[in-house]
Image (cartoon, rainbow, N blue to C red; front, top):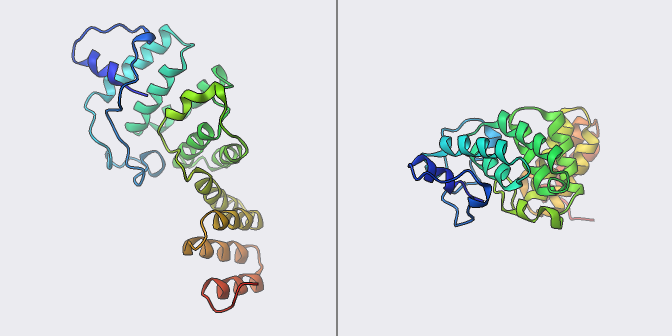
Length: 227
């Protein structure tokens, strides 16, 4: 999914706003997933290959959507541009607009995961938790095939990260046992990851399960054999 057309417009080529002219060539930008600009605040484009015309791209696709509001590819491109520029508030608004206009295309795990991560970055934790829960309950569908090209937060570790964030949010919202269950699922998805053991012990302690927490701590430290 590209914003190449808007770059051409910014350089004065006079390209039309007709959505059919939006190409699907190779991406001209990349996102270093380790920096996650949409979930950690404004990092000054850290981890991004510079794209000097991203603002022109946003302007172009906003105008293109007005002319052709039924073309989902225009929304995808605008989402990419907003994500690159860390415009999280506008990105969330666009997610919700897209959900109303394209219910089938937005009914996927990738869509709700991207929405959840963006909400999490805005500290809208209750809404983020709901979207993470939606994400783990959904799969892809034929109506949303194009959505697989929307590279925001979604990736092969999406399910793992969903349960990880759910665990943190559930513990923070006063549901430590549910948090422990989510973290336990994370541990099953990524065995041997030490930090998830620490999160699991913390959730048990928050639930007042001190004996269980102590036993889990000993197990993760290798002091006892697994049952």
